[in-house]
Image 1 (cartoon, rainbow, N blue to C red):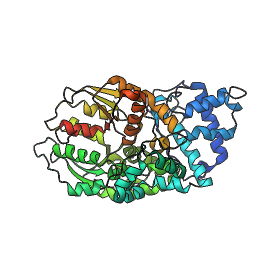
Image 2: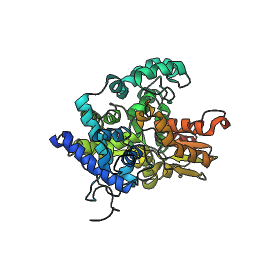
Image 3: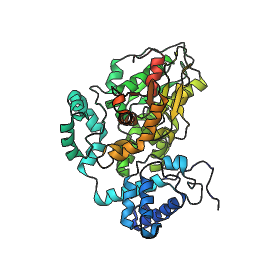
Length: 450
């Protein structure tokens, strides 16, 4: 037996369709095994709050070992997990192919799934996870929704907190009054026929619920950059990738989303299109999580092979065909926050690599979690923890003192900006702003204004 491993991590299918997956006694035994290994290692102490909670339970127990922790306390460790995958991808020396075969995030997901099946998922939680429904309805009342959900609207937000469990101080995404699908149909883009990639690439932009209903500028910037590089694009949003429901432990609903989205995207793959996911969480789902939820499904596997993360796609064009000329330096430099779900794709820091294609531009990389973790960090019981976890990343961005801050994850960007404002205090007279790296890239091409 080896102590640790330097081999590439290997992930096994979730096994949620097998009887053993739902066996509570077997789950408790596996959690005990994994927690005891984590207790003896403790490399993950600074990643998220799951591990400090576990270690505090052990250290404050009567024996100073895991046997002193009541089994009912195990749920407290799971409740702090954001499924960011950073322990599996960057820290744990005991992931497969090591014989101990630890997969902490998927073990926490299994616990969550068993709890959801046994006790059900609450109405409010279920509705918050239905991002397509809320996003589509929100387009009709966007100004009202944005006013109501602004964290400065303290009285109303506290009322909403009592109903939804979303912390009144958590910064929430703005609602767009027009979906990205509709905006793309309305706004034309002109293909650059002189670009090296012209005629060699075409892509379907999987809009994702976030870009489609909230951050349509990310989609517009993507279309502009790809058109500048001669890449024909189509915009589709068949449905949400299922990540919000997966975070609740609803694996069956996530599998249904995988089947629905893949059925609508695969015909485009057959026609020679690449699939480009506009947010890293959705790219992670299509490329990695769906094949583990529905293993050996040929359609899911084919879609996974055809899918690119957005930054990954631009870098791939640069390497294989070359980029169109016209990029201008970005003055003042960029602090590039690498989103956890981008890092979990095991593709390298593609967003930073993309921004470094801009000439004479300083790019400072931040490899710390923003603390948000999807809707997790906005919940009343988690918001203060999310702020604590995000402080190192915020402090790094402030120390870099760049003119621009970017994050591949729009939710992480908003939260990071909020924590930066808390850290800066009265020395910062106006709110910080973070862009998606593709927006900075588009401005470097002269395609968008500040």
